[in-house]
Length: 61
Ligand code: FES
Image 1 (cartoon, rainbow, N blue to C red):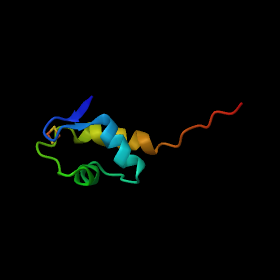
Image 2 (image 1 turned 45 degrees about the vertical axis):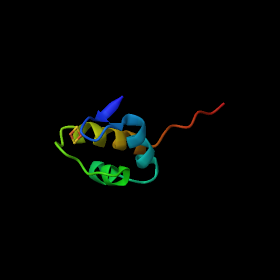
Image 3 (image 1 turned 45 degrees about the horizontal axis):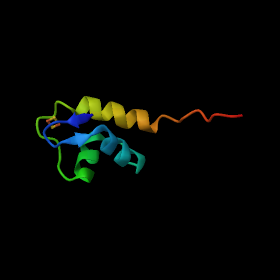
Image 4 (image 1 turned 180 degrees about the vertical axis):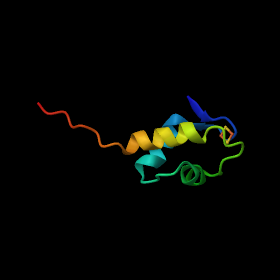
């Protein structure tokens, strides 16, 4: 699924850079090559990044 239509960034790409330590949508876009254009996608991108950084509950057993 595309998060950013302007740049053609996919959800998986956003999650990937978030996993590398990026915490801000604009930084994630720069890491992928281009900063935001229209900016409409930034809220969605930021939510994905935030979700990536929420500590996961480890499954035991
Ligand atoms: S849709 Fe991402 S900057 Fe426009």
